[in-house]
Length: 387
Image (cartoon, rainbow, N blue to C red; front, side, top):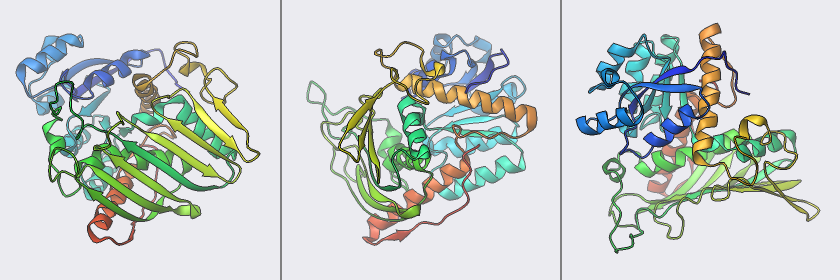
């Protein structure tokens, strides 16, 4: 439930320009329910793009900063939080600087490019008694939250296996003229952890934990490069064993023709199975052990998805990607208000640096398994879903 004291929180953007992949989505989501307003920003290193974005977002010209360090210095006492929306490789130093300055941080996934850096940011947050929340937007979909409630309520019985996948075609599909669309440059450079892991697989790890509460224990994987950008990993398949005896298959790809963004979640239990597909986000299909099948949406008697906060418009008019982001921004606003009032908070809808660090450990194990062809064990640490 969103709690509000009637005020709108003040947000600054670092990154998120009109030319970025996520800027408009974050801006629309933040302001959708009047939980936030975007008051300041260093949206781009390009002067013209930076100031054009400020005008488009209604930011006063004197609060559009040409350097992110300048934004932190000038705005640290004026903003309630900063959203870090730059490419993933630059997240860690910016998040660290905000925490050192005492500014609450909302960070777009992935938190960092390796698990060690994510753990260091969690430790810095604790030392500075700061606030750090991650955005994994797919966890904001009402029917994903409904599925989580069904798992917790025992509707599916004991979970035994799963299939989760996120296939895309952006590295192999051509446009209408036969030319290859050009992804952002940072997505075409693999570091020690291939960029597709940081771009796509972080979502699959987070969603599995969000839905099931289970942790990955062992993985065996293969990955390859099949698209137009030779040497850049663009397809990964892995088998996983999770705590509680659950096991399953994870697939993420950017060289899977026919899939624009084919995020699909399948959970199989002893009493029922459930399937959700992001291309049809309002529907959750449940198949029961007696052979019956049900499709749930916001119009039926649901425990979570039918709540008023998710009914910005009536069922039959689908809510989508931006609304899912807005749900997260509402949850983060509630968490931040509690944190400011008490120094702490508990939220199952606000995701932490600890979860980000475990996700990166998981991805490092997948990478290592793909390199060796062997099963890899995954190091564990205590998880905390609150930021």
